[in-house]
Amino acid sequence: MDNYVDRANQVMRKLKEDASNNNYKMVTTSQIRKFLAAVNRINGKIDQKKNGNKTSVASKIPEDLQMEIKFLKVKLAYQIGRADGGRNKINPVKAFAEQSGLFGEIDQIGNSLEKYEKFSRYVEALVAFHKFYGGKD
Image 1 (spheres, helix red, strand yellow):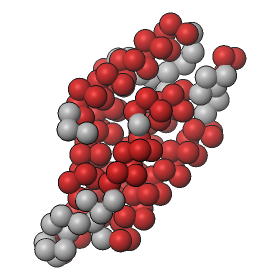
Image 2 (cartoon, rainbow, N blue to C red; image 1 turned 180 degrees about the vertical axis):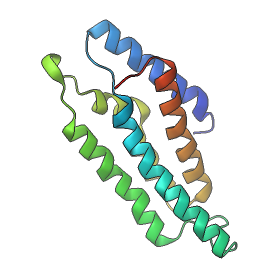
Image 3 (cartoon, helix red, strand yellow; image 1 turned 90 degrees about the horizontal axis):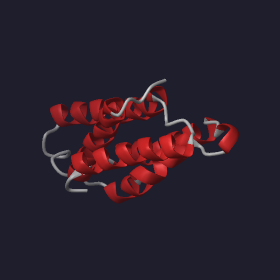
């Protein structure tokens, strides 16, 4: 995920186009911001650990935080389950998760701090481009 900004732009542009062409609702801001909030909570915990012990978090994520990162998949799955596809039965959160590849991205992180930081910025970029393309609640 080297170019996460362009990728986020492409994902959100395609979701917007698909929603417009197929007459279904795009994922809402609140649905994806809940996921971003969970990512930001992990960011805060990583920052705390970095400040407390600079050597152990320099490149590897501690095991307790690795589990929290994996649990992001559960949070995303829950948001998918809560979302209503409406009359066309297209679930906008599921479309978002599939297009963005978030489940796979979480799997790729492992204990790599660098991969997690790129993932975190990718999620933030997705939210920003969602807003840019007119995403609403």
